[in-house]
Structures are given as C-alpha cells and as structure tokens.
Image (cartoon, rainbow, N blue to C red; front, side):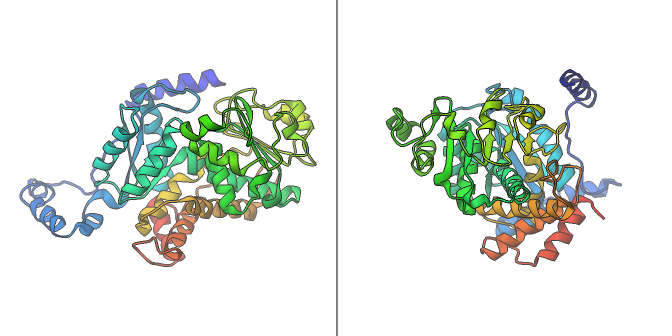
Length: 417
C-alpha cells in the first residue's frame, strides 16, 4: 500500500508541477482593467495604505493569507531533509489550508539553522501576512523560535507540530475518556517521546486542568524524573523538557516498563516499535493507546487490540481514529483571520479541541470514532467560529462579532452550503 501511495504521489507531482498556484480574484476583460489593478490606479491604493495600515486588511490579500515557514529540519517521518526537500510537504499543507479552510497559505522554506537568523527572516517578512504557521522544525529549536516570534511579531504565530497536534490529540483524549468512563483530569498518562508534540501536549493538558504530576513522559533515556543524571544538561540545553521534568512524574518512576503499571492512557509521538504489547498488558482497565508516530505507528492497531487496548488511534488515514492536525489548522486560522486575532496560544488550541470533540460526540462516539475525519467538512466552520468566539471573549479579536456571524462567514469562504 505504501508503495502505491508513493508512486501515485510522484506521478501527480510531475503531472501538475506542484500542488498550488496563484489566481486573480477579479476578471481582466480589457486593457483598462489593467489600469485599475496596476498603474496608474494602484498608486491610489498604495497611498491609502501608507496613510492607514489597517486598510491593508480590506484592500489586499492580507485578510486571508498566511505564510507557512520551515527550515526542513524535522519533516514528517523523514527528519532533517533540508528546506528545498520540505517544499512538497509545505505545498501539501497549503492545499489543505485552501481546500478545508479557504485560506491562502504560502510556503516559505528558509535555509538556516540559526535561531536568531530564522527569527529575523520571519520578522522581516511578517509585514505581509495575517499570520505565521511554523512547520516541521526540530526540537528544541522550534520552542525557542515560537517564543521569540510570539513576543516580537505583530501578527499571530502558530507552530502546528506543537499546538495543532496537541489540539487534535486533546479532542481524542476527551472523547476516549468519555467512552471508558474515566476523568481525563485525573488520568494516569504515559507519554513516549519528549519532542515538540508531547511537550506541547503536556503544556496544553496542564492548561486544560489535567493533574500533570500523574503524567510520566519518557525520551530515549527513559522516564523524566527529578534526579536523572542529565538534569543539569537539560537546564541549559532544553529548558522546555526540564520544566516538564519538574512538573511530571510525581512518584519519580525511573523504570520505563513500570511506568505503564495501572496507566489509563499511553500517547506515543516517537518511532516504530515504541510501544510493546507487554507494556499495554500492564495498563489499567480499558487502556487507551495513541500510537501516533508517522508514517509507521509505535504499535499497529491490531497488535494493540490483542494486548487489550480498548481504543487505539494512529496518525494514519487508513486506520480508524486518525489524530491529524489537519482537523485543526485550516479551521483555526480561518477563525483567526476572520476575527483578526492578535495572538494564538494554548487556550486557542483548547477552544478548537473542545469543538472538535463536541462534533464527534454529536455524531455518536465509538471505540473506532473518537474524532471526525477530514471528509466531514462541516466541522471546519464550527471550529473557525469557536476559535473566533474565544478570541472575542478574551479581548484578542480586532473584529468583535458573535459566533453565528463567524460561522456563516467561514462557511461561505470555505464553500459549504
């Protein structure tokens, strides 16, 4: 199956010469029309914006445009393949943005691994878009870049591998716990992998109200705990992981296998083989297994079910319960742009997650349906409206309308009847 996907992807890319293009928003029927869209008429538009920058939201594509920025150091399942090789992935992201959110998303790979240089490039180009989407950037580089850009830019910044993945996962966890009759905020959780996805998820779970002392998060060296021999190194080299080390694993469990004893949930964002059947057998009643490594999950769903897993998710569309940030980002930025939101944070991600979870619950939850699929397009204007309303409620929106206004606007732009 993988081979067929790969061959078809190459064939399509060659046939169409990429996945995106630029089209005019208005018809050009005469030479006079060019005089309005370019010289001499365009001078009046530029003059107006020079006198009042806010007019750029009404008179240019800024109202509906974001930049997808990467340096290609952590591309899905491929690792550090560089900025140019990341371009097909960014084009795919752009296509999803347009198809599901109606957003113009322009891919901009940057050839640098220097934090300050990366931040400076993004700052200098951020005058144009309505927001910045960071993508496929290695950890801990991604944490530092996100923090600096959020503090220094005038437009909202989002890192999809952190906040988007966390939001989609939170939605799945909310509904999984409803199905197994447990309280997510009191659940014992094991996280496998301490990169961007799980560190951001930990932060979002804490914001959601989960008892993070009951979370055990492990990296290649085993569980994080207060007296691990690399504590001092983490303080200086990865302060984000260090902060989690201080808050998690209240009982200082140091044995990776024992961390599964009585666990309610295991969440993998690591690599193939990262979850063993014998570990699942040590978990509590009705264990929930999120094996979200791509392209090959930590454990295949049938193997996890044989070990006793009640609910299994992966990051793949060919299995039930795909935890996919594509369920979040097109709609989230639709809501951000429509409300002219000035900031995206973990609360924004939670607002999106709650709406995603509610949609699936309304449809009818089951062990093989904890979140919607990307084909259920009616979810996107709902998330957009929820995000916009959250921004209004928290005083972050430049356009202060009600939820119904944002829902109808998003539905029209996305192209749903």
